[in-house]
Length: 445
Ligand code: S3P
Image (cartoon, rainbow, N blue to C red; front, top):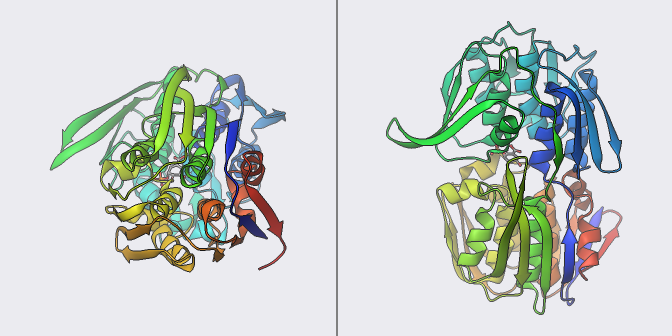
């Protein structure tokens, strides 16, 4: 399917978005490990969260949807049933990595697999520490399928240093750590999204995070104390909107003259707001107001008006705080004036596509002047992009970012493989249309 976006329409309006993807994944799997019924309002119903729900059903977890409220009957920490066959995690690395930890904690055997795209993603980063915890997990040259035989009870407590800041790896090990024989200590070079920690605390588990001196420099230390016989409390939560989905209409509003968009009730956890800080540093007219907290997570409203943007440098911790937002950010940088440099972002090569290579290739198709570097890119913004035909590379965020470029480009943009947006933001076209953008779908490419 091709998404075709015709420029020339300003974006106006106020909206609310479906629940954050990372929170939806965690709420589903943690509710399954709790004892009692959890109710999660504004759950994100999308491709990747569907993968998580089907996987939980295969592990014997009963759940149902009442509109967008997910109701889960918690099975308790040791309560999964062995699945009859290999579990298909689709394209969802979050499902696979979080489930590996949860399955290890429950002790049941399972095989975790996924799409050809998921089979390319690195899994050695969870396999080695899970093995150190006593789980005899195996992978195929560091990739899925992952085979987990029945794990011993309890698991061994570990102290583990993550080479790359990764919330999926951290969360996998925290979930496994729930069944460990002592406190689990994790050190990461920068603080990745900390939703698992916040949600576990809301469920009564002791988790402490702090910046510490570790090895050669600073690290973020997370320590989880296993609850032992104490059950995890069920969740009663309304999830705030997905800030990574919000990035697309926000950038579209900033680069399209005459636009004014307000997004209400969005997740504003500081480990996720790096894009907002960078856009403000580029001169964006963005207002961000925290309005409240739910389940330990701050949420609020974001208001964006069309703005003159200029180039910026992004490196270090900021990369981690906006790891999923580089496709949207690169489009903003192309519409800015001047040079943008992204460094220390090699991790982008291991996402749903090699986002450094794919972004540079596709933005060049729209006339951008951009050069790939091993760990980032250098983009000379000229204040505009041309129309043209581009490809999603099977990557939902690349597809949406390129579609956003079409809202303000000098001609229509056609995004081949546009159906992939449904993996995380099935309402993308509807939301953009509601704001006034002109989005159509066509068959084939
Ligand atoms: C996620 C963590 C990030 C992010 C992904 C969702 C999560 O991945 O890119 O979209 O929900 O924990 P890494 O942990 O691999 O950086």
